[in-house]
Amino acid sequence: MSIFGGKREDFRKLAEMSSVALVLPSSIAVGLFFGYVLDKWLRTDPWMLLLFLVFGIVSGFTSLFRAIRKYDKEESGKSRGTRGRGD
Image (cartoon, rainbow, N blue to C red; front, side, top):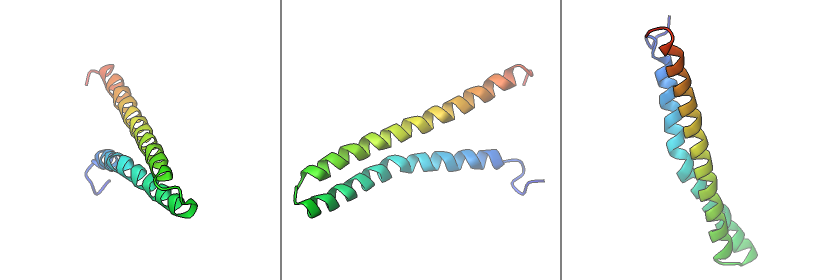
């Protein structure tokens, strides 16, 4: 018997959605960081910063859309599975 009273699946979904909310800003931050470091090392202000900012944004949105698509597929699969049983 679960200490969560059968709500383990709900907690899992909450954790997944919370991580999805952090994917975009963290990807942008990582891109900015590497762009800044490369600009200082190569003395190419501001080109590497801008380039890696774009990479971070693209990476963040790609990860965000993949996570949303995965969540949507899981939900649609569950709703199809419960219709046949008359729930």
